[in-house]
Image 1 (cartoon, each protein chain N blue to C red):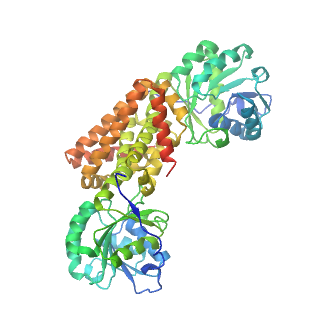
Image 2 (cartoon, rainbow over the protein chains, first blue to last red):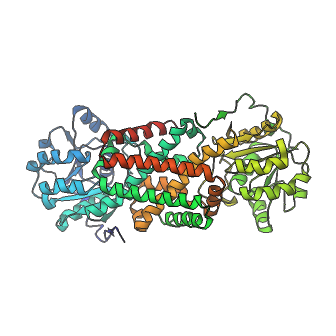
Image 3 (cartoon, chains in turn red, green):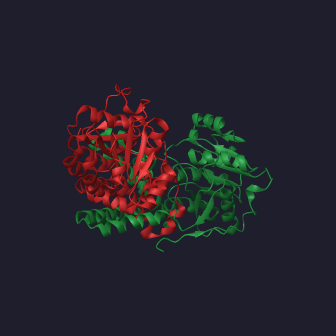
Length: 298
Length: 298
């Protein structure tokens, strides 16, 4: 097993901070978009906790108030952070460090901080020095080619996986973050930040590269070819519609694991081309049979 | 425009052989699976024509009778071909030549022959010498990772595209094949066999290669990684579950165009890796923006 992963035991499902009827419990979401907005909607539907939201500008604030109806929304951390027991960073990864330094002085001593960023080694490297073991990295494996608060859905995390990357956090901190995600219907797994980044380079970032490159190959020949396509091309390339800026950041932040994944992918494609050049039907059959057998295990 | 394509004019939509109430019109399907079975169900639902089926063995015959309830089903071409105005080959491409030589002597003079094979230059090369200009190649761009008659669906062709590759066929022959597909809800396009094969190498065969290679890269690291995946990986790799034997044949039959498509795909991935190695955010952004803009035109 080259990349270790360990599912969280489910025995603690009822020890949940978020399923108590204690409506004094408060979660603060920092600049929610698709993921944070979906988390807010799910928490409001499935728990009694209060949801506060920090928004980055008046336009975002107005949208937050319209879409999420939080118990409190503000442009000022002073109005959001004190009294909040859990802070969730929902911003792009490259904005987290700057905001974390503003939030830290306002933080309750027993507050726990987590995030929803797509890469974890970089986030842990920035936020652990600020929040120490109060920070538990998180990455819900859910999303869509759509983005922004207007695409938020209260069922986005039902049956999804959320990967957590605790770094020597005390058990109660980790448990609170586990409970956050189980409360909205996700299953949690725990990994090191490095194992997470290698895993998502393969199961999330490489598929985006594969889809975008496929669209670019087809359309560099003739964009009208897409009109002939069936469900296979459409499904395989759906995620190529993701927000370019978001993906540029993810690729730069997870550069080495993605380069490795791309290199392995090109090797697989070169092997397939080699079998085809030789018209080696046995090797082609093994290639496709292996893929079919693996894929059926999802 | 490197690969030419030309949509069929829609003005003849009402001149349709298949939308008359003349139930003496008969279509024969040769060994239907997913595609042929779906065609039979759609014809039965949407037209008054009679559907006859030739099956390759008693087990297939029994399944045909149970799933399709055709007006006639038989293991003998003598009982299916005479009196039939349209014959549709639904077998794997590599079986068509042999069966065509058995069918030819039984064919009505005014019958039209077509097929649903995924490659066209090879099929035209085999069947045009037998049926001359009575043969019009066809390829409905619909399907699924499932296969076999048990997966047939009467709505499979609704809003799908069917590519036709007529080779100097007289207008009435071509029109009958156009009418067949418009009767079941598809739009027809006409191309040369070579343009078809280049087009499907890009929009159908390359996506299968991309999906299968992606599964094999991920699972060669750790098959359990798939358990962490979200909708992106799942959609991108869905078609890797297609029948291996079918895909081996398609790859061998369309070898040169697929090798070219694979080479262009590896070039695109190498370009992406190069931009990432240089951390060239502008080039990465252009790559993803181009893919998003193209894909949104589907």
